[in-house]
Image 1: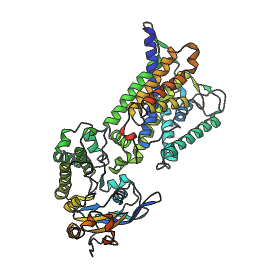
Image 2: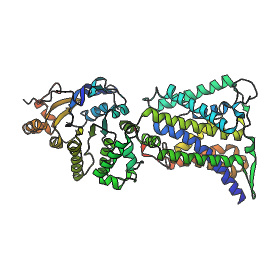
Image 3: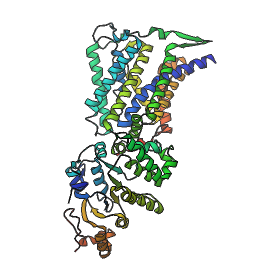
Image 4: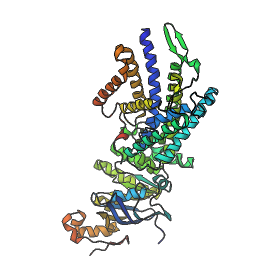
Length: 304
Length: 260
């Protein structure tokens, strides 16, 4: 019983992290049909923003020492700006290009960001401890739950609620939903394309920053490609959920998170190293059964 | 004559290297209902999409009043008072009926006008008022067509572009939709440019008609002019391919059809 609850909390926590990352990918995909593979590198940049840009072997932490509200605001600011600049310099000139071209553009952007990090910060991983208090566990009966897991789950639920409120109640949100469903029609009714796309990049960057901080608090090390696996899982989750459906994105994130944690717990010891292979195996089975994803929005059909 | 409200002046539109529209001119005066008819692939919808800003003409000019709009972004064209009721309606199915109606209002500055207009539309389209909070995907085809018209009106449009409004609707509903469209002109002085596949229906509702074929305007004139012509050239109006030698081609949009 206790063991099962423990697994459940772990799964919820990892699923939450994936759900946030997947939403960041899914929002931009929704309005732009852009699979932004540089998203993982946005996550990486968020963590590097905490330290002084030097090639030294040890991290010199600056922003990472600030009180948490300032720290979060600074990191969010950096990534949101990066996200908007990426749109302006790379994706806006490609706006009328085919989705495949946009995707290749995002790959290129991702590699450029990684290489800039290597040049500026050096390629070796560096240890950064932020918020050491989060490593302590809260004990409830026999259950020991790390504070960080609770925080991840709570933060995710709060952000999901805020995002739903934004999308349902605010004029921007309604226009974004319309644009995700039928961008051309929305524009013909006066919805400004650049503002809607800009908003998607802002929220996407915001989510990348939050994901990065939660992830860093857990692993304690920055490296130039630390965001890549998160981005990959986010993409897989997007595809499972149904490209373009935000509810699907959240669902997909939790499915991938649960699958990872359950397999970690249930697989025989000698197979655990290959856990991700099993996760992807399950994903392939899901996709064979539902190639359009679990929740398929009408907008993901052909857009002329 | 003063400037027409909408003037399409010798536009060419290409899809890649394929020329879909090859020098089309259409003018629409304030309060007019102008229909564009013609067979599939004539370039009717392409002309509308270029006018709405979705496609850029490779040549030619489009003006709303004195403002040139060819190549302008669709959202900017919309703000100049031109709104689209597209083929297939393109309702936002995951949004509620009211959200659909409001989507074009967020860029408008006078909120009081918006609320008054919304009230008026809900009164004129009771079916939309009843289903205000349901997802638009749940509406029938005819209801969606009404929603698309109401949604376009709420952008504050002076000109409506309506693409194949009868497509996929039951005959009764087609009647209703055309009653609504002509009512817009009669009650609000709305200006309409309608693409219609059926020449008969166009003759019924339009003040003037342009007949398009293979990317060109083949014939233009007032409904009564064309109706007389149509009696003489029944075969033409049936778009019979074999009758091409009897066609009359006019060079521009002089508005007068020249029947020989």
